[in-house]
Length: 244
Length: 244
DNA sequence: GAGTGGTCTAGACCACGCA
DNA sequence: GCGTGGTCTAGACCACTCC
Picture 1 (cartoon, chains in turn purple, yellow, green, blue):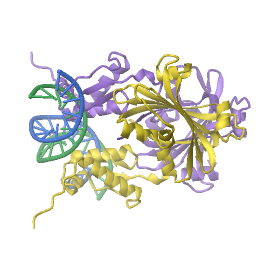
Picture 2 (picture 1 turned 180 degrees about the vertical axis):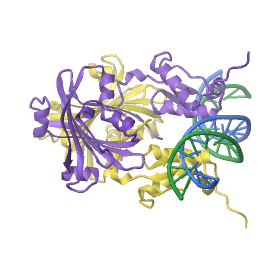
Picture 3 (picture 1 turned 45 degrees about the vertical axis):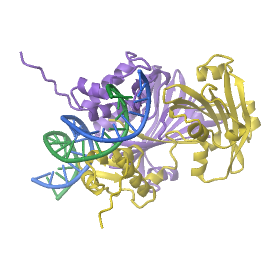
Picture 4 (picture 1 turned 90 degrees about the vertical axis):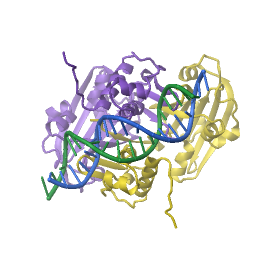
């Protein structure tokens, strides 16, 4: 009898997700024109500013492209494999790749910080830190060596079981830590003894090192990660938008 | 005497630039608290929504950090060297580095597309493309080999003089092309004969290859760039924000 | 000139952090 | 309970594209 009113919180997120899914699914093909902002506002029973927040999110994530005076158009999302822009864990990556993976935990212990770790985590030499060393096997080859360091003040307990599954699940869901942002740094360095021992390294001289400095919401640095990738298997994809 | 009224277009950009500069200059130190959104609105004689656009830009570019119920705080920008997130040309990079650089142009010609170029630029095998090959010398060493390919339909003329300075200046300012976005891909590959000939390669076996697919506003792909960096000199910095 | 996106205003209510 | 940022509304004017 009466009108059914559905209340949705975060209208702009709702619009964003709806269009992101439709584009991802291929329902909206590359080059297709989206309804105008005014039309969308009417469609969703909201205003232009709110629609614009949703569209700007779609632009930022490479789904669409806006042209002043013309309209918004769908981009070819499928042309780009999987962008690692943003943070992505090995577990998430493995799932996207859809390949058989295995993790071996070599170390889960509280150790004294050596000079490099002390510098990277901005603590004193000899201060205790959690050290987790894991090798990642993809398609039967040990390709990635992950060395993680956490501050005990923030992460009081850590076990091999946690290290074997997903440390991030533990940090975010169990400890309730809110990870805010990270600085990633990619370089190529000479392979170490450790690399040769824990990876299938086939006599390659160098290794790709991805250093990750992870910060919490209160801007404190709490984790330093070194992800060491075998040269021939490394690939990083970035989507960049020119700022005029 | 009357009141002087200064009209500024793009208030949010004005606020953004003012704060970005003050943070960059160190006038606002890491951890410093910004005025609240309402205060800023009053300061600049505008409204909260406009201030929020400026602050969100500062967040996106890693200058500040917002906390609901608390306020906006300055991040440590100087901890990160120069982020290559976004597009950056060699000329821009060299300026930021402040080191002596030199460019040698080895090739500026219209050639027939080989299979790789045809695939990368999405054209037919044998179609004509502009090929520009340049080596970049930094601090007296030839470290980067840039191989650029342009579609003649969009870039009709190209000379060695243009290649020696900045092709992007020419494209954007002379030809009026509007570059919209790019897909960047980083991998490590075996060094070629060409790499050894045109770079100071010191017997290194591999080379870092940064492939760049550049698109115009109308989403047409118009340029493919291969930037080949000597292993030991390569560095890529990315600033990633976790999406919750 | 009609339609589009870009910017801005002047309000409003909510959720969160903190004393 | 007060101040903060997060979201939203209902308008407005402008610059741009295209016919």
